[in-house]
Image (cartoon, rainbow, N blue to C red):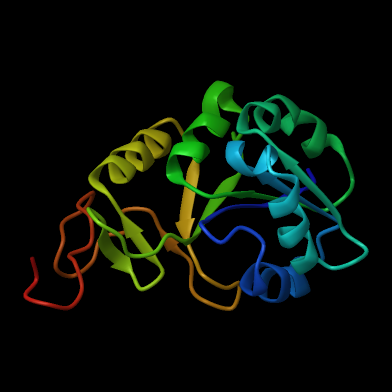
Length: 175
């Protein structure tokens, strides 16, 4: 199996992915599965500048990535698959293409309607429900910003939350 990292991170290719994860896993191919970016040559050029010069970088719609998962898994090249959103992850997972893989939830930042699970993981109720459905379908999910950090399994119980409950929001008045 050569898909070594499937990561949900709004920033896609950036320092944490290239330096943090890249130095540890040495990817030979970065696949950015993103419908909008797949159609924007100038944005692709910008993102590709962040990748190591010897790495292949492919920008494909999520549907194409889903169709090519088996091909990339059979290839010997170390591959990172990067997605911008939980919604894109759900589309990629259709048909069981992520079976046996653990998805890295690595960078979903604060925004309207999102609550903090971890400093680098903010999710809307819709995202939470989608991740619950993926987990119930057998997709492994783990939050981790860097490979040197402790991975946090999706819905890991905390002292303040029962099993299966989301961690409480951090900071503020607790609401």
